[in-house]
Length: 424
Length: 152
Image (tube, rainbow over all chains, first blue to last red):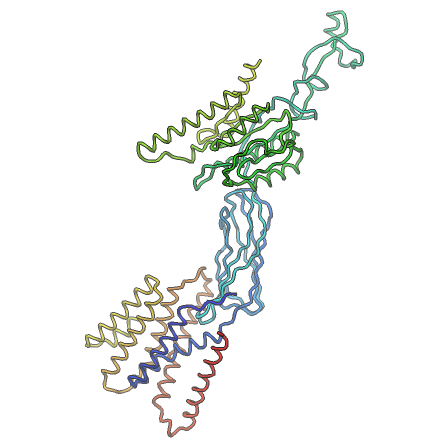
């Protein structure tokens, strides 16, 4: 523990010395009587000041919570020597706030006493936290000397993003070979009727369409669309964000990504993840609950890392972007590198859909004519960026304060339906 | 803090001026959390008391232990205003802190009374008191040595 002498000790020593000298000079014992208590107190304070032995343990009740939930944290304090006046503060990282309990707290511990305190913390924002940076301050009985220490009792706490509401997913243009929930364009074993064709050796009898066969005088069989799964890659743009104290485009993007991942995995799809920005992070497409946890853990670590280096899709490992995969990009479209990378993906034939997490909701126009003009020009540039995607045949749905994520996805779906008709 | 300077100001303008100055320093120190202003205020109030004694008739002031207790109490309260606790204490801890303050004031009055008694005692007729004084001086030197060794 660090020993800190308070200004009081110096003041008392000075007052005592001054009083005693004054008593000698004026030959008045009353002044010595005035100075004596200060002298005694200063001397006693130094003799009695002993660093207390205090042990602290911090243990969150849960290791994983969802954004918006509360988590109880047990703080155990014990002192072998006792502490007359102890102040304890558990420093809370940004994103966690105190919902219930006292922090900091003042305690008096008898020798050997053990006390358990409970703090209830609210998780305000998703993220990976280390909880347990403890600051202790013990005052000596006379308040002349403090002992301070900082204990590192950090325990990990992962706060998963609260998923956004998604009713219906974007349908991939092409499916893969494994069975799933999408009706494939291919023909094979399935439930959905596709077409009729003449019987061929090897066809099952149960597939013969007897009515059509009777009409045409030869055997005809039904063909079906098989139910297949798809490969989906959730692409999160982490080059730049727009934010205000209430949230940021990255916060919204992470919540939407979490919702997409859990929905697609529930549909038996293989889901991969790419966090494309100042720091590249990726997970190859896989299925199952384990993949959900892997991706959500990766999402929790997503952050904006400032980087001026030019990055393109070549830096993404090839297996992360399998052929025929649907790439769902979540981007504020603020950085030219991410826009270029997405257009490059489209150019390479990927089925791409972009959900634009609009930064306009976090950026109010400044005051004055020029500032308003600058804001309007910025909005026009954003429209131009969206138009570049639409010209490349990429659907862009804008998610802003006027439209929910469901609305943005509907915008994407409508464009994709129109684009499919145009191609046909 | 107010009672002492007002009581000892009497009708002497320099005493009243010193008292007001002391209270001013003390008030500014506690209000704006200026650590240096508090001992200055106490020194000025102490000077007022010293001037009162010097200007007096030379008889011993029997209220000196009370002045000492009041001065220490004011100093304790002033310094606790400078360095307020981080956390709000429980009622039991608050009571303990208040009891500590009262105990300190009572102890200060006791120490001051003892000093006053020792100063007024006729040590020539009581060799034991003289021996106690020598022991106290030796203890003070020993304490200084101990503190010097601990801080080294």
